[in-house]
Length: 415
Image (cartoon, rainbow, N blue to C red; front, side, top):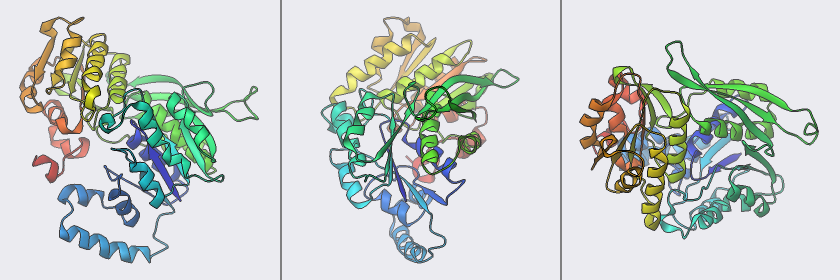
């Protein structure tokens, strides 16, 4: 069985939560990293190569090992996973359409498209991105399942493009699996440590009055995106015959992936929201909303460029500047495109509260100086901005960078 996941935000968290849930009943292999294209999907099908791929790169020795071990493993049927969870990426029109011809899913999960998605550089607009994402659903048969985000109208509209059974998830009261009652959790020191929420299952039999629900507690990560991803994973688990109690237990034992709204201890007794894996307008907005909603005496946002937005770049950065200025006490902008964040933020924040730098290395000394006790610090930007370097500089336990931060392989550290 193949479970396919696509969308413009939340793919990795959703993919990992699905894996955490269904690994309780099935042997699972989940694609890791960015193995989401015509090269990455076959690698995941053959074996689990993400660590070697990202550490050493695709050398001749790497490919020889892949072919040898992959050939042998395919004959060890008892060891092969029952479920593959694959991520389907789309940098250009036609990408997903090509992937699904070779690797057809049985369950397709669409997270979100948003009004200005990531990788929109080669698409006319968000509707064009949605059309490409919908190719994951068009290949489904009447016995398959489509899991759709009810809160994104472009995703919800995709239900008309599939023959499959449709289950929806989200915060909407009309979703089949609804997340509700989100609360942020702090420890005895007052530090934020995670979130709690409820997952509610609505079925035709229960919608008139009876609703099944379970509480979920996730530690180590913040943001409503955790509830979104959990609801999507719950929908997949229910399709495969699991009950909400087992699903809740699996989710509560899961800790989110590195660089996705992870909460870390910072210098000077501060707290860091590490969201440095990547950035799109939708995920940047979600990260800032998380910063807004988590209680703190003072809030700092360190925002890097959002890349691959093409002609939409200036508008996207200006919109983020407007939002940031309504939330933060201190704003640090990193990169040439982030100047548009600065310009918009100046309408509300005074110039002495905004700092700009060309790259992450230049920004590090000033950021260390700015941070005060009990500050809540959000760090976010696209992969190419290497914002995790800033987190490494301001985290309380720099000796744990390899365990806690993204892009800590020799290949990335050499860049």
